[in-house]
Image 1 (cartoon, rainbow, N blue to C red):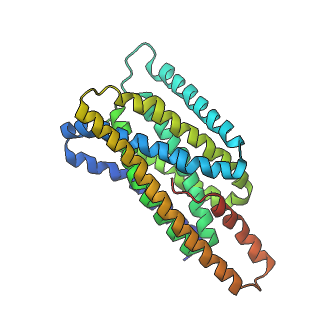
Image 2: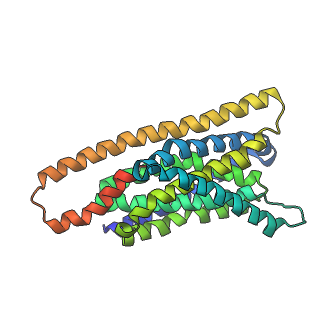
Length: 287
C-alpha cells in the first residue's frame, strides 16, 4: 500500500476520535451538567500538562530561550483573539457562547495541524513507525477530545454544534498531513515556534478561561472532586507521554539497526529519509 493513502487513513481515524464526546450524551443532560465542571477541571489539567510537560520542553530543546518569548506571544495572541470575539460576537448583547469555546477550537486546530505533520514524518521514515505514532496520538487524543467537548458544552454550545466544531478542528490534522508529506523539509524549522505558541494558547485557556469557572463552586465535596479531576488530567497525560516516549525510543533503536544492516544504501535514499527522521527526533509528541 502506498504511503500517502496510509497517512490519510491514519489522520482521518484520528479526526473521528473527536466524536468520543458523544459518549457523554448517554449520561443524560441533567447528569452531564452535574459532571461538567469535573470534565472542565480534567481538561484544565490535561491542557497544562500538554503545555508544560510536552510542548514547552520540545520547543525549548530546539530553539532554547526563544521558546519562552513565543509562549508569551501565544498567550498575548489568545488574549487579543478573545477580546475580538467578545467585541464581534457579544457587543452589548448577552453572549450565548463563551469565547473559551472558540479559543479552544483554535488551539486544538493548531495542535491537530502539527499532529498531522508528525504522522507524515513518521510514515515517511518507516511505515511501522507511522503506525506506532498514529496509535500513540490516538491514545492521547481520547481523553483530550473528551475534555475539549466538555469545554464546548460548558461554554454554551449545543451538543450537535460541539460535535461538529470539534470534528472540524480535528480535520486540520489532514491538512497538516498533506503539508508534511509535500513540504516537510521546508517547514521543519518553523515547527518548534508553532509548538511554543500553541503552548501559550493552552496555558491561557486553562488559566484564564477554565480554572476561574472552578472557583465558582463552594461546596467542599465538589471542590475536592474538582481538584482530584484536575490532578487526574495531569497524571493521565504524563503517563501517556511517558509510555509513548518509550515506544519511540524502541522504534528509533529498531530503525538504527536497520540502517546498520543497509549501510550501502545510496545517498539519495539517505537524503529522502533525513527530513522525516530529523522531524521525529524534534517532534516526539502526541497532541
